[in-house]
Length: 482
Image 1: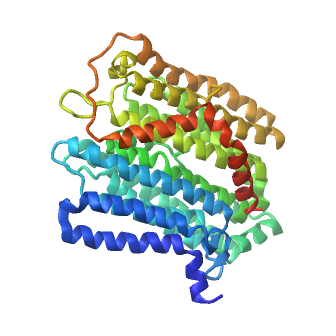
Image 2: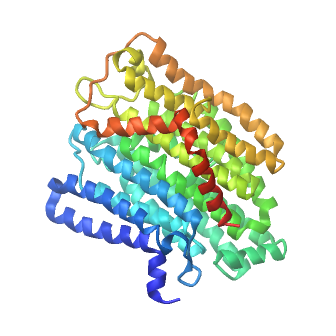
Image 3: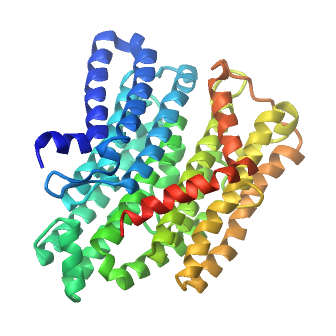
């Protein structure tokens, strides 16, 4: 295959990389005054990368001698990543302009573009080296984003914690990669799968464990979740919304590709790891969130809880299971971004962010539309019908039952009732507690209100109308791995 054909398959990452470099030069010359132009240009670059997926980059096959794979699975994941990244760009201006001393700078959308390029490499990786390079590009951008508010102690602390623990997780992952390479003699997923299929090897088993441990950190799955609550609370709210959506999709997509393509013959070995991580994440995310008083920390534990449900589909190890995970991720992104868009509206009389759950008291009387949207997101995250979040859980539980994992599905269903408690507590606070001081209305115009409305419509019963299209797209993407 010639070089031009290879570049055509990697066109989304080429667009994001060139766009990030060009916008970096614009921001250097234009200074802070170019922020709004750079932000909208970044959204246009993300749209261009999505358009590039309609060509060979969407389903062209393997590029660069087996390092990169362009297929329906990566296309599905990249669309979700680009949507979440674009929303994170659009959320930022109003938030940063209201925080003291830290107005939005044009480096913010540039970092998001670079992170999106890394995430695209992650979900298209067909080789352990591509996997690592993509993951590190995403991580390095994320470390800076977490500490983007330099004068805010919580943001600086979040960035430092994320960097230290992320470096540890990267080391664990790299050690696992070295073990797999040492015992298989290759870094390409197809070759690794052949070696796993040839017979058991203790070295390959240890490599599998270390690789899944490194990926679990990026998912924030238990027991590698410890960074999540502190980083989510300390990072700027638009960055937290980004962390809870796009990198989650990339990490879970990467985990699925490694599990199915590279370690498919070792299903019995990695299924045990996935089942443990799934149940532990569901239980810890449900129980630990109960005592939280900060809405961002509560949503952090909610993200851990939701990762556990997504992993139930992966544990099935079937095309239906992977399709269930992809469906879950699509709905999860809408629920999570909608929730954080509402959190952005929580501001006191001085316009400063408010994050306490108590401040939501009586919001149904002071901001009824906002309270209704938040209630829909909370009910949907809890998986309560008829909202669309119920179908997300149904898809992964159905796949687990069809794969014969009845106990896993039963425990997951039972544990979901625990998580419903803290979601319902937020709704109770908004509708039944005495009103707290009302949140001031923002001056962002119709943009954020429109995004909240779109997310609310998606998670409403109207979302069920998309099931034929979403189901067909997700199963086609899943079968590309098999």
